[in-house]
Image (cartoon, rainbow over all chains, first blue to last red):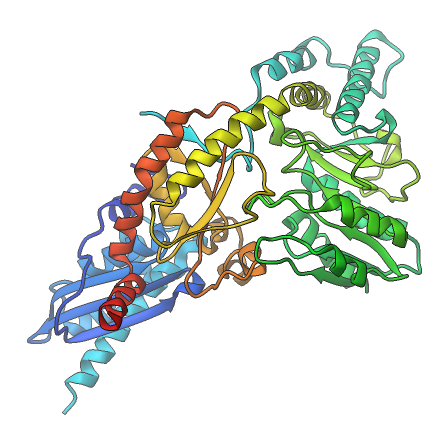
Length: 127
Length: 402
């Protein structure tokens, strides 16, 4: 059901977000945003043999921020690390059937979260 | 599903009686008040004049002191820009409070560009302007002081009486934006020493597209719209006759019913206010007693405003937010990404709060509707907190600390 400025898909992911939570002993954790700017996302990844086998998130933010976080976790599960790193905010926004122009920064936050979590993974597993 | 509208500060539903008063002026009485040599024009002119007297009566003014405009934004723009220019060449200083509406604040941009100096008065944590601060801010070259009567976001009523007396002693033109208060609490220009006062019809059960600016006799204001001699030369352009008629009818209604509405709204507002206390880490905003009847505003730690409002809407409850994200929906620049200017002004910490919630009740709201909101809120807060990384961190700190 569409509400306000959002597509049905955004509302679906906002009302029923997928993969909310945290992963104990995650292989990579990414945190981006700042509550003072209106949103903050923390992404947890479980990576096995170069593949994202699990992803969970917690997000403080508006409808678009929560929906972008939820959609992102669905998109990266099962992807290789390289494939996950290649995901852009445009991919997230498209998967949600678009976001209002002023909410694009929410999908950018999702893109940055996955890159930040993968950087953390590389750092933890370096050497 | 029951639907409850608690966003009357953004607009009120048109009263059906007001609509009936307007109806003939769409179809039968379509004349232009400026073309009154014939019957149609005469009828329109009489209707506008009558509405002018009705709006004047609501605030204790003379009919000749009411200029009709398209609404509060135009009235505020005319007051700020017109009075600044009207004050004369030597006066290049303007004083406003830190919690004014955008239509006052953004009218300062062209003034600053033209070399005017602007002093912004701080407010205390309840959003109240200190009259002593006003006294200190006014100078010999001050062209205008603008302080709102009541704040839409946090409900606080400003001490415009004492502030106005200070302005009068200093010989400074005083503008009061009464958009949120007029029609809801007494606004009387015989008691408030305002030279200019803004009114908006759709904020008191009148139509959108009609507002007024009270101009006390002798106040110098230059026009913003140029053309014919409508509205005593202060506002050129054919009057929006049906809307002006509606504003007059709404003024009569408000003048008659205001006391009963306030009693009804205060009761419902108290139920809502008291019921919200059950939600942990909820902070009320605005003055606890000097506030608009039926206006309840607050923020909730670890909960973003827009998300809360979206969930409330799903439950049929319509409220508003001054939150970063939702104001950003309407805005278009980086400035909008910061927390609400009003919350910042009252010193709410921006790292834990980005969403103030405003419930503004109206004459049609019921106790059942308030119950609907109170039943819905705790679950929504819990759900959003369960999703929030800041709340998770808070819980972990609690465990460690305990």
